[in-house]
Amino acid sequence: MQRSRLASLLVFAGVLLVLASMGLLSSVLDDWEQANGSFRLNKLTVNIDRSVASAADAGLSLRDAGQLVKAWSPLPVAYSAKAQTRAAAGAASAVADVFGVNGHYRDFAEVRLKAGTSIAPASVDEHSRVAVIGSRLADRLFRSGQVVGKPIELFGAAFTIIGVYDSEGSLLRQMTDDGIPDVLIPVTAMFDVHASARIDTLQLAARPDASVDSEGEAAQRVLEAIGQPPTQFRVANGVLAFTRIAQLRALLLFGCGAIAIVMLAQLTYRLLGRAYGLLRGRLLTDDWSDALLSEKRRLLTSVLAMAGMAACIAGLWELIRFRLYIPPEWVPEQVIDLSFYMDKLRSLWQQQAADGGYVPSSPERLADAAGRLAGRLFAAGALLGVPVFLLGIRLWAMVRVPLYLQLQQLFFCIPAAALAAFAAARWAGLYYRIEPLEYAVAGALFTVSIFYFTSTKGVTLSHEKNS
Image (cartoon, rainbow, N blue to C red; front, side):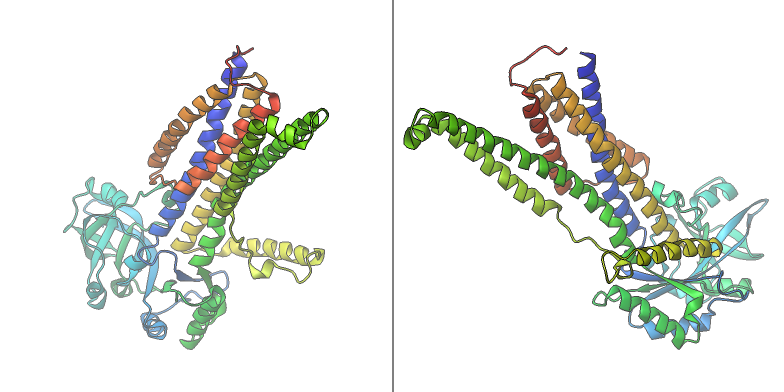
């Protein structure tokens, strides 16, 4: 009985880990897309590399940014300058990260307003000294979220608060290591009150009909056209980053579906072997026609079962197959080329060393956080969830739990695990999102595993006492 309970616990833990990792992976990807505004990830992020640009005044001026906007027209561009200063309101003060932004900032970064309005293009054009502050800073300075219309001092100048946004966000946004600013002000006003301000991050809407590589080259050409050396900037492609990280979800689905397909293939082979053995035994005493007539019911049942499993294999393959994206620079001319891979590993180590002095932009921090969180969820589902579930099913078969009881417990495990995963997602500030495709693949793995291990151990449909 204890082994049966342990098996049930392992099965539930495996189902929970698989469903939670599948759903949370989709939720993280969805939250990541939404955090990038209305353009989602169809954009390029151009950020100053201060580890290369040693000059203190590296970056773009307002004039340079205006020229770049014209060169990239008709697609929109958002640009920002960031600095740290002490924000003061009366006797209260706090160190704040201030972003000076243009009117397109909200198109490229989601600003979840809790009150008031955001920075409008007119405010940028008029050099208005207005500010939109985060809820955490509002609580520190005013002990309240009702601060619209109140004054705040930034860079020693007076600004008027016109809006408050949620600066807490989801778990993904909290993992960005202060990538979320405390205050947003018009970039023109920042240049007015902060003499050393420079625009260091640009977000360019990508052309949907252009390739990934050509978009990066186009951004570099635009920088050259306005007199900025491209070597002082790093260009990150949002579509490329999303493609790489989204593959983890597809790989998890592929792994679950592939295991189910292998089990179905082995079950089909077993049925074929049993049908062959049945006919062979009959042919020892009967001819072909008599053997087929005498065993037609069992043979027909086996044929229908094998046809059904073949259809399931084909359907699962259609659901899980995908095209794996491998960056072109990681594809050698010869498959077996050790020197190529050694050079690539060496370049990765060198890149890590170079990244030590690089300060990533907010979109890059968000992408890095999404990659880390997605990687952990993938590991939880693929390296923990699936093995734990299969171990539990195997233990069920070893203690000879009846097949109907296994299916009954699995039926209750799935909604309970989905509810627990939903609660975990809400705790993390995410909207739990699991698609019918994911339920179908996971359900196929769960169900096929029960039949596979049950048939291996010879468990019957009749109720037997557990040891």
